[in-house]
Length: 188
View (cartoon, rainbow, N blue to C red):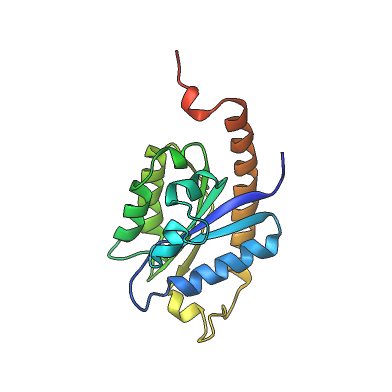
C-alpha cells in the first residue's frame, strides 16, 4: 500500500471574521511541507467545500475517502463550535477506525478544553485520537498581521510530532481496515 496518506483538514468555525483561517493555513502549510500527505480542506463556512462542488462528492464521500483527519478548532465558551459538531454528527461510519489529530487555539487554554470534549465524541465514533496536539494560547498574539507565527519553533516541533504519529496510525489503521473491514470486526 502507498505510504501517502489522504488527510482531511477540517475547519471548526464558521464565524464571520474567524481566526480559524489563519491557524488552518499554518496547519496546511506544515502538513504539505512534510510531503507525506495528500490534503483536502473541508470548511463548513464554504458550503461548496463541504459538498465539494467541483467533483460532486458529498461530505460523506470525502470523509470516507480520507485516511486521517486534522481538526482545526477554536475554543468558544469552554467548548468547540456548533458547526463542527453538526459536521461530525452528519455522518457516522466514515469516521470509524481512522486517526484524528487536533490543532486548537483560543484564550488562556489554547483550545485544549475543546479538544478534550472532541476526544470523547470521536471515541464514541470509533475513531482513534492522537494524544499529541498543537495548541495556540492567545493565538491572535502569536501570529502577526500576515498570518505568520512570531515564534514558530515550539509549534513546529509539536506539529512534527503530531504528523509523525498521525501518519503511523493512518497506515496501521488503513492496513487493518483493508485486512478486516471495521464493520465486520464485531465479536461473535
